Length: 114
Ligand SMILES: [Zn+2]
Image (cartoon, rainbow, N blue to C red):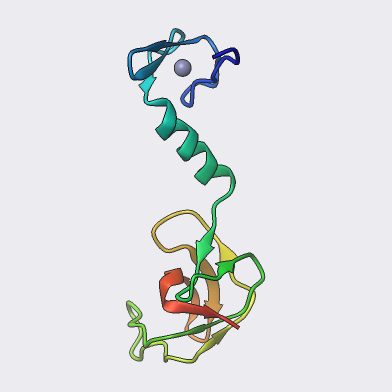
């Protein structure tokens, strides 16, 4: 290995391999190299996919593929509801959008790109 690997925690490249792990001399963080590479990849190129596996990006329009119960609302968001101009965000619910019931965070798995 010729290239020093940057520590995923403190970003210093004062790191060295120790058996299966890489160790950062600066902050003492230890991590498996393969997992670190995968994590970095997911962070920089996060792909959120809809129910059909199509990649969703900011500004896409989607429809609901099932009724979704909404906390605090008397009626659910109906299947087939179209939502414009979604925004991809971090977290368990990846889609930030405005619906007829107000701003909401939805799971991409319940949406289909249109
Ligand atoms: Zn470190």
